[in-house]
Length: 388
Image 1: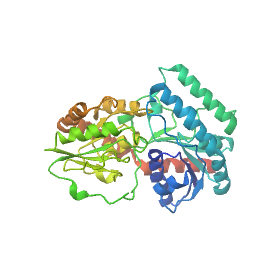
Image 2: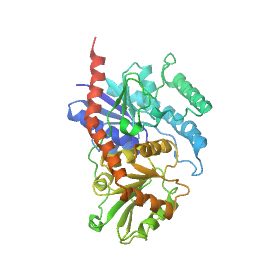
Image 3: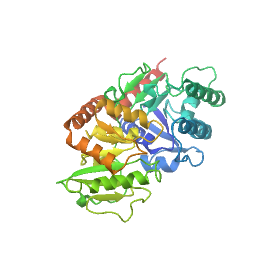
Image 4: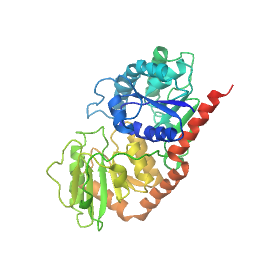
């Protein structure tokens, strides 16, 4: 049996797919360990996970007004770069103690890729967002050049300076947790394997009032992810207003971790601090979200059409994928009000084409194999490592 070390950033949407793949590898008899933020990994992977603690930089939240190139600069200069530097000693210690045959590193946990190349350990990239496959910086060559410079500096400090490949794309294997039905047919590295979303059972965060859901009405899930608390208060309030105007046939469950809607629950709107998302997706008719890859992929895996309001980072790219696939409607986050949100909801709830497109993506996801396919590809990397 082989030994796999998962290196993950302190981001829920990036850890969840890895948890599913790790569980499948464990089921097959392999040994699995983790390098990352111990509290978050334990919460998502379970108390029995073998976790090697890595330091992480301070609060990664940025100022709400940062958008576009400014947000991208923050992401790389103030988060991804410092994260790699902070995590590298912990990753190296994890390698020394666990002695993995393969390192599986998230695309945004650059320390895993750089330590792997320096120590000559086979590495697989976990691409939990497909944004990088679509060449998002093709129109901004100076930004792309700046990022290449940052990657070069990180490689000189943490990796093997003789290597020339982009550390975000391992030459051994890139696992893409999507399919071309959503991501499109853009050029990808030949070592890329599209496996679709990888899901595993998650513990219910808190008791949920399932009895409040009315089977005679459409249920809509509204979520802006875990990293936008506070930034989306106005948008959530407008979503609630749009649903109340349609209370005769629509009700909403609104993920409201910051309590912006505290005290406003009624028969049409149910705000909760945390939602059992996978369980809810089996019940809802539509999802309104920020176009985070995790929420989009999980929604489409259940054949649920979307209203997407991207905020920053990879979200505009993922939103474009949703609309190109025909599986949802895009609105502007900053200008989304009860009228635009309501009109988009009417569209995805009453126009059959959106659900049909969502179901086409769902079928492609299911046939891709998910966690089982990802585990099989990782086993192949480990087998090649063991060959003379």
